[in-house]
Length: 522
View 1 (cartoon, rainbow, N blue to C red):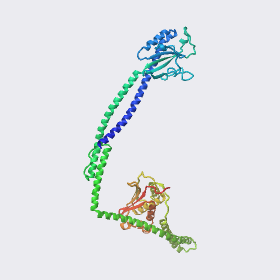
View 2 (view 1 turned 90 degrees about the vertical axis):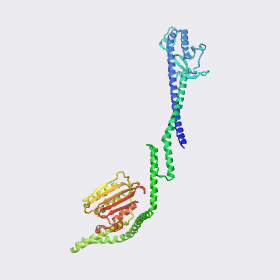
View 3 (view 1 turned 120 degrees about the horizontal axis):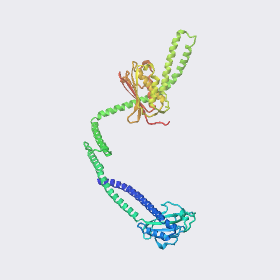
View 4 (view 1 turned 60 degrees about the horizontal axis):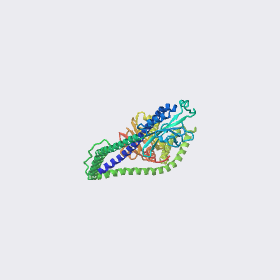
């Protein structure tokens, strides 16, 4: 495995390096070749200009013998292959090869076609456009450059012969130079590049092999050894090497996994020893869940029952309230009966409120859900009640989590729940106290919670299981016992839960849990 891992990493890395180095070398060679060609074209262009200037005097005086002599002398220099001068009609007038003097060149020949490619010959062209590279029959590579001889004033005003002034070009000087030196330089550079590439590839392969052995292979071997020890059940060992990279993090993960496996095995052993207590604990949890389900079923059944009763009571109550109000306002009424009728009206209204609470409790109202912030809903709830006389001696502390996402819920119904909870907390602290409201997200990110804690009188343990039952209250004549029941139904319709913790004399904490996932589509 060690050799296979090192070989794969080394070969793959070297292949990538080789591809990029070949591309880099190719680009460099192409750029060098282009540079050398441009330099050769420039030198040839300068040579042509020198020949034209050197023969200008002889041309003006029509000293043809001297012009031929100059061209032969310059053509004999090292690094020059061929020089010839061609007139406007394509006839070779002077040349280092005397046998071609007097012959004609086709305008489509390589020395002419760069200017005669169209019916209207070009009078000016760049040196690169006037150059050509070709291979002679003997395999020798040459660079040819054609340079125009322009009709200057000294030409068309000379006494010895006459060139019309409208002639722009009198002829062309064609210079051919060998490219042996350029090719030798390219071959030398190519050989050097190949040698350096092979040397670098060898050094890089050696360095990569050493680095992989030290940084990858040895740590992997230690991890494999540790894994084998874990498979044998030896959990007192750990990976000892240290590293600041990913392998170091992997080693730390292996060590953490070993500790957790060891702890899990100890817990399993402890579980076996304490199975009876664990079963009792789970049974108690299941009993609590079952009690909550029974409460939900009881509330649902009771809701159906009280709905029918409430509707039957509501009609006669409305009649009693209307007629008692009318009688109490009748001027013919005996004043001694007025107070009694006022009591009838008050008690009837109280009965009407109880009936309304029954209807609210039993009504399966569909939540009108929309995206809302529980922090904003809590602030709106506090603004409705915090200025009441009940809260004058109560200190309200808000501890909101600011990064809570908006949730899909009915803000009016949730506000009703918050108001009920806060009013209950305030009524438990008639002599003053502290009311703390917290919001946040559970550690698993599945629920947002609202915690309402007071420092009031608290709820006894025997009453704690009854607080969500309809008509159960510890406030004597101050409540109907339906507020928490209605709140329970609202939160249940939002797929949430209400948890309560209380201790007599220390206070009560209600925690409302609402799921963050979208259960309905707007």
